[in-house]
Image 1 (spheres, rainbow, N blue to C red):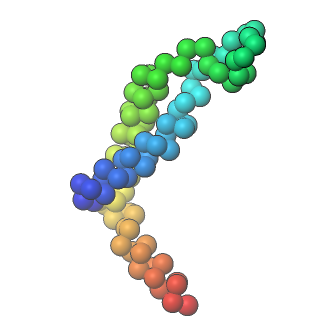
Image 2: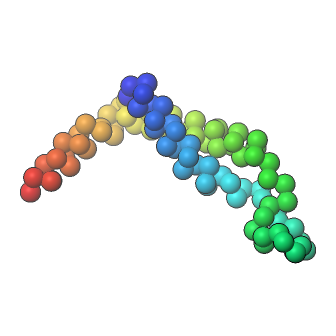
Length: 88
């Protein structure tokens, strides 16, 4: 995996992970106030969300990196397979 592809994979995983991490630990107000959406969190601590997302992404990226480097996942092989299937 090159540096560029490693960075791109990291960014893709990060953006997917942030949507998974956003609802973790969210508390909603018990009483609805007029003018406030029902799904609005009381304390949206985005620093924690970004930190959790980054930590999760690091773990997932290391797994993907290990799979790619050990040739368990080969993007070149996948591209060749797709090219063969497209010719049919």
